[in-house]
Amino acid sequence: MKIAIVDDDSKDRRSVELLVRKYFAEEGQDCDIALFEDAVSFLKSYRYEYQLIILDIDMPGLGGIDAAKKLRERDPDVVLMFVTNMPQYALDGFSVDAVDYIVKPVSYPEFRLKMMKAMRYICAGLDRRIAIRTTDGTMQIAASDIRYIESQLHYVIFHTVNGNLRARASLRDIEPKLSDLPFARCSASYLVNLRFVDSMHGDDLVVGGDLLRISRGKKQEFLSAFTRYIGGLSK
Image 1: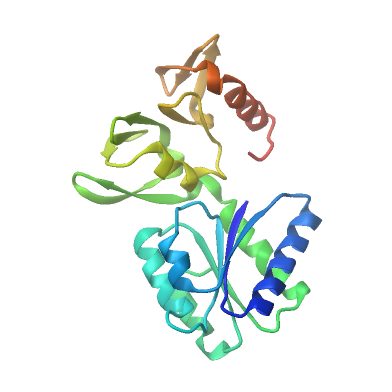
Image 2: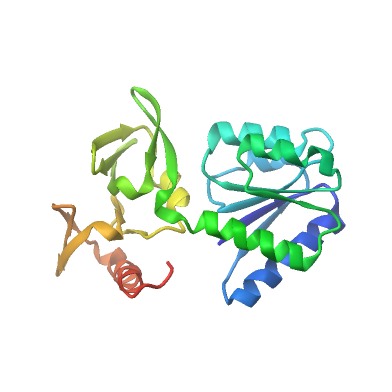
């Protein structure tokens, strides 16, 4: 799980980080936390790799609500949570589909409940919709409809249950959006939704009726991900 914490106050930033680490330690899960002291630098370096973003509302320059509005123009799917010492502004967070808000000073019991709620949204998993830019404009597709994604030069082809969509992007752009879902690469050219794997025979993989090849370099990693998936384990 990759999480970003954006807060201009170093003490508050560190406090929230410790609460996040405590939560995941209790859950027996790993987490990777990135810290940012202002929203501008966070947006400038944003790469669609976070499952949860915790934003302070009151920050100099670009505040948390305005930063979230800019973020939503680029990523409508990532889960947002706000922390604030100004509860009168917290409800503004729902205008950008924030999952919840926490009032400073943050207590762990309250924080844990909010994190449990956020995790339910994150782990809703395959109900998530992702935005892609096609030649016909920006579209949103459900991750659950994607059978596999194919890389072709400067484009990717989304092979879905409703047909194929072509977008100007790379698998490197798309993969972080699906990193916590049961998707895995079987080669440098294919990112596969594991729920659509029909069969495997040697280096041949059948996905939604299509025959794909498993590369030697990706085979062990792919088999491990698929084994965990059919065993009911998280990715």
